[in-house]
Image (tube, helix red, strand yellow):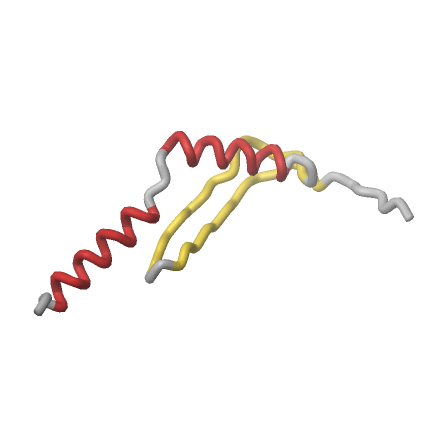
Amino acid sequence: MPNNDNFARISKVLQSDKSVMSDGCKALLLQDLAEKFNEYFEVMGLPRMELTCQNGIYSVRLAFEAERIKQFHVIK
């Protein structure tokens, strides 16, 4: 019968492996997000991202600085 400590350790390793994002993938994602955010804001630089995984659930936090909010006009 497997040891519960070993099971917990293996589970933690598997979850942390899933939460790893390569630097290249992260850079591409941040560039894509900067382009999208720039549609609504005048963005200053790339956004920052914090990615964590706990019990198989991802938490993604994004932050960026903007000089202004762009104005939109609704067409009816």
